Image (cartoon, rainbow, N blue to C red):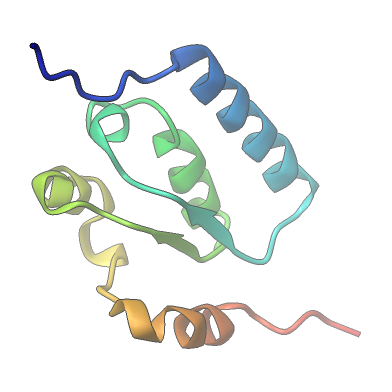
Length: 101
């Protein structure tokens, strides 16, 4: 038998990115991206959305698997900080700016 990894549905990914971009355009306090994976490491997927959010001052939380840490560090530079999983909610609460009344 041959072992097969999961196969990325690029069409579904493109739809998800488009929906997320539309939501970001309407305004967001925080962006959470499931993973900075192979597609993002290669320059696609949610990479532009992450950059757009950061350029707009919107905090972004994204999981980065160890094998893509180098690509992520090259992409995010000093804009990134590691957050332990148990501290994720507190980080999100602290990262979101209060809205003006």
